[in-house]
Length: 313
Image (cartoon, rainbow, N blue to C red):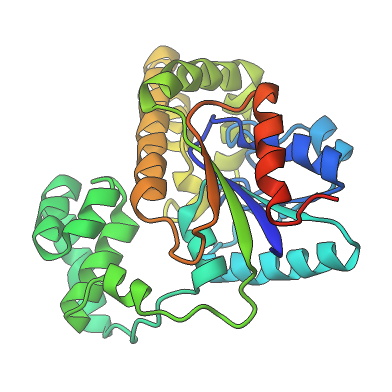
């Protein structure tokens, strides 16, 4: 195996597990979370602390500025370079994150969907504006049930993308993805999926979000808004940003904003759990599933698993 993947929903303990493995194995931790890729929201995206980042090599955290637009392909190219660099130092690359599309792009490649005519793209955007998210989601469910099942009604960008692909090509995005060949530089990976029960995650998510606000997340969002960025940039849609921005605009009390932010975080975790249950890349079959949050007592089990693939000395 070329690399180790630690994946799963937010707040499952992935970062702590990755750090424990990196310290034990001499590994290099590579970020695979689309929100932690940006440098402006360390607190709100639950990025590893400066102390943790200093304890072991961490790569691709805060790699993009707020004005930049990240993508799965851009991240894949950066991640492949970091994997190769780590291995050249005899360091085990440990990819950590909950962005399933990034991991799929890494090991399976991105779907070679033909260019979508601009007229279809404009029609999709106009249709979404006219119908609204929930009604558009219902429409997509009739055309592409698989995509609708894994996408939230508020995920306008991905909903429109799924609609335009099936409308323009007659094939769903999932069908295109399954027909995609893995890129030549795709690493062979062993994966550890940290998959606690959704109900077990909920109190942890609520407590963490409140701790983020108490620890400075509101100031982070205030500084982000001061940049005057367009609302459609990825960072402006990061979990918690719209909710806290509403409070800063005097459109919601702080308690209302926190309740909304917690609800948004729970919905995000639910989507991640659903993806890893049903959409995990076909070329990432070698995995161990933890059905609980990470704790040190699972390390013997993890190392027994890794020894099968000669990732340990």
